[in-house]
Image (cartoon, rainbow, N blue to C red; front, side, top):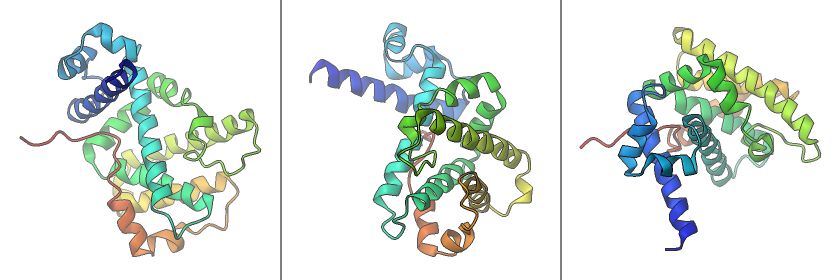
Length: 223
């Protein structure tokens, strides 16, 4: 195994093991030393790949977005429109987070901490998550794309916090995910989009969302 491939495998292993620790203990209570112990690496090895724990957190969220994007591309033959795919990304993103209490609590803790949230999400390269943040115009400048991304991001943050604090107002995480997708679509002036009719009334689509297998964090296997 060459050095590059070995390094890539080590980096990915750190990320996967961290997802298990974050799931079990949350972000703030998981230490870098615990991550090192679980992956059998030194602190120096960790900082070679991730300078800080927040850099690792950025990678966790970035991977989540890219995994959803890949799933949608592979499972959306009946939805050829790029904006439909964006709505699917939005719904899967939120449904999978709020369907698991531990992941929901983890995500809420990140949103409530402005310093961490801003560091993670404002520094995600918008041009690299072009598909996931809904941009359908390849001719947009980098500045325009950034402004769209920030508008989208602010909406996600406020609505996610509202849901976390008022879950009883919604019938299910899937219903909330549909509401969020519909509201976010208005940012892109797609006011004619009826998410419920297009997606929630389609049993095959609902099953795809529920069984996507994409997850922000990973529950440790029961021994």
